[in-house]
Amino acid sequence: MIKQILNEIYQLLFERFGPQHWWPGDTQFEIIIGAILAQNTNWTNVEKAITNLKAADCLNPEKLYHLDISRLAELIRPAGYFNIKAKRLKSFLNWLFENYDGKLSNLESLDTIRLRDELLAIKGVGRETADSILLYAFNRPIFVVDAYTARVAVRHGLIEPGADYEQLRELFQSNLPENVQLFNEYHALLVRVGHEFCRPKARCPGCPLEKLPHNLDAEYF
Ligand code: SF4
Picture 1 (cartoon, protein in one colour):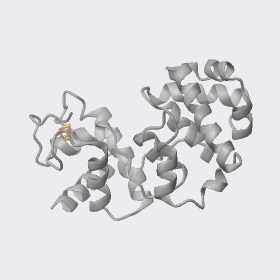
Picture 2 (cartoon, helix red, strand yellow; picture 1 turned 135 degrees about the vertical axis):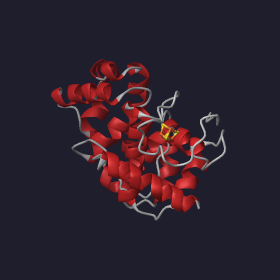
Picture 3 (cartoon, rainbow, N blue to C red; picture 1 turned 180 degrees about the horizontal axis):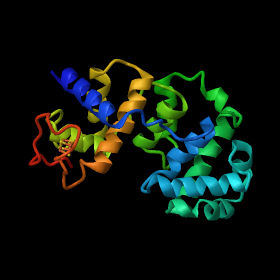
């Protein structure tokens, strides 16, 4: 039953919105930096910060690793929380250089669980960020969840209110085929419907999932 509903949700979202082309980014490194900068802000602000890094010719591991942290904070200012995010970027880079010779290619041989554990051990890298990096930068079959995912899943009766990140991830991962492209598109589509329709105050009329049973009384957090 859950598999069927998850499949229906995907089909309806894809029919309405089409491919979302995630994650925007020219290189694997840019995707990782974008995932770290995306915490608590919108994508437009992340893009401005990335544009600044590119304009300063700093968007590669070597240059960013050696860049002064106050200069880095200045460049990523548009992404918000720039001092904290500069420290997070430096933490990631320190880990990469101290353990993997500064080369993303050296991470490819790590199995997904080990890579996930190591990313989560970096200060400031939470589950959503680590999983975004795994899925979108390393093409690993990890389902990324966020507040939008929780809201849609609870309102459509797929999971109990109050479910935590790992329970939500498990819901999707254990009921969908293990397929990187599917996970990629599905997460992006949930963000889209959450952004446009499934907001804290739901806008069900006109939503692609309107015809599926849903319950707006369910608290999702
Ligand atoms: S807005 Fe309504 S129909 Fe759309 S996903 Fe949310 S609960 Fe479902």
